[in-house]
Image (cartoon, rainbow, N blue to C red):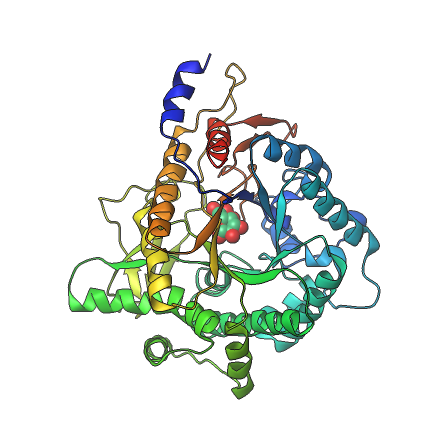
Length: 480
Ligand code: BGP
């Protein structure tokens, strides 16, 4: 019997603004499973995961088949939107865009979008979520400008084909991809502290995004388009000049470079200065073609929306030693190490709690991020929080009706308060997508880092509700 605790929970319910987009997020490779089915081509992860032998992307939550069930639950929980991504290689199996798309893949996404709409869930669709086609990945991924051209063609195909979709995001989290691929070594091709590749890939992705936006507008497609950045606000460990400068450098690397490229359409003097210092410290280079800046500039005035993913802040101290990293992928609290030569070292702020994976829990950071965007980029487009959530180790107890995840309710509640505060102060935020709808495959952590409103038993594929799901539902009702 849950009556008592539910009523306590409901007391905390805030009122959501009318018309607020209230959703949850997913990504193709993390939910669909069935990575070899119906002609799907390989992506950058398939062989890597197989060789590594730790986790398989199959069956994940078998969303490829079970989407009707999951979308129905989402609808019943009061969600009015869902974030999903298209797997490029379901449509064009070897990445190259031809006149003969894989029919089974195209049909799958039509069925999926149709089912979303049937359940009154507005689909917000990402075109690239950490899943570059293997053939293009082997040729340099985003470091190879051929990838940009293929991405533009693939995007154009999707805009023409999937007329059911009105809200498009080009690329998910450019910095996470670059950090994991070229700095921390946790995503293929698993390089460590290759600063040239990390910055170049992000610049090239900004150009790819911009080209897609320019095409979307030039061809007059209906709907809206934007991209998604994860923003991690950086705070200095102490008030010393050295720590404050390290925080500035880290912020330029993590946030400023991408926000400038997207929202200004150029890298400001201050940003270029900071990035140059990082490049020099790490013997690295960045190549920008003159036409890139034209393309960025044009797109910067045409973004319809900006997706912000927020998980955590960083506390950084000045650091000139050798670069070093250890990824806490198994939830052993306190095991992470991240020290970046010339770009600061992560330190723990004892006042800030962390998850088992050492992710800081700092809702005020989200407020700071939103205020900063509005202040530094006054022409910003409407913002959606496209991901925010908390990973935890959880196990289903069949003697209970719901899985108790009050810590997740606290997490969402506090982050929502930060959003609504920024909104009350004039920041144009119109929606929130929880990461994630259901427990799913976590890229470099496997299956024991659970984020969902819906608990998934990965062996039986049974679904169970967590208490956060009920709370989410109660919140949805406050909009009316
Ligand atoms: C974001 C990604 C998601 C998701 C989430 C949680 O960076 O866009 O795909 O995985 O983070 O991260 P993780 O699974 O590493 O805990």
